[in-house]
Picture 1: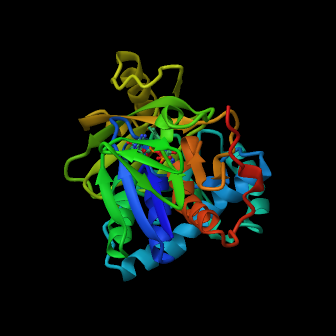
Picture 2: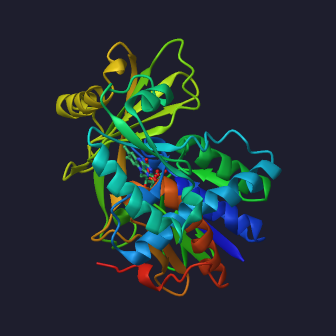
Length: 356
Ligand SMILES: Cc1cc2nc3c(=O)[nH]c(=O)nc-3n(C[C@H](O)[C@H](O)[C@H](O)COP(=O)(O)OP(=O)(O)OC[C@H]3O[C@@H](n4cnc5c(N)ncnc54)[C@H](O)[C@@H]3O)c2cc1C
């Protein structure tokens, strides 16, 4: 079966990998737009602490975290180990220890359904700072052992390389839809199935109610610090800190609705991210700013992503919002199975794409 995947962010890359693994004849076309979300995403994988109230969404979100445990060894078998994934744990931090105890009790109830959340332990401020040294001295923590982080760029690149090793063919440039096929490079290419994973740019291809939400995220370097095992830090609110293994600490992020596809670092965005980061971790004050990344989260009308069939030949994956580096690899597997017409590991009915 000939299948064209448009878009090679984490969702398109995973879809292509799973299609190729199943033996499909896969072509991937990607335009590498500035601001593609996968290249800017922080990479926190810790769905259990989210306030997600939508049960269908939570099943997908927690299923995404679980799926990494299967995917990482499968990619390693194909020689793909440079993915920036590590099970470093996560710390929910607060200056109110009673609040953390109450939250631990809520999470314990969730852990029956999702044991991969791992052990939950309350840490004193001293213990929390031992794990993440720049942290403010009065912040206690609830440590979630199953928390992880991933480098979206490396993960998507690894999935794509694996797909190519399994026979997928990659093209660079902008694609458009045409009746029963795809318009690319001045030619019409026929396909049995087309899967559109075009992120925040999808509405230029198909009438999807997707809007970009701009995120500005700052990368810092702490010279001489071994940051590779530092846990993710989750204070109240939408800001956070996480670390990678090259003395890099990432401080995120703005959530700007209505900014369109405006690929710029703004004074207000930079100030917001740094103010929040230094409030939680004053020890970052002397860090070097390496870069500020900008990404456009693809956001739909509700929290649920859209995954599935639009017509006999056309399939769509989109709306991963602020959770796509967690959900993307699993959603790609589901989308690939849907396109191949085989049963999916999760019922996709709640995620049916609604055209505008
Ligand atoms: C600042 C920030 C922080 C985030 N932090 C986290 C986090 O900690 N944890 C988490 O789980 N998620 C996080 N996310 C969310 C996550 O990054 C996104 O949900 C996810 O990357 C979306 O992936 P995607 O493949 O749908 O879209 P994208 O990565 O945007 O990829 C879409 C691709 O489609 C291509 N394309 C579009 N139109 C065409 C066309 N016509 N022809 C060819 N190619 C086309 C684009 O060039 C692009 O490469 C964050 C996002 C941002 C911006």
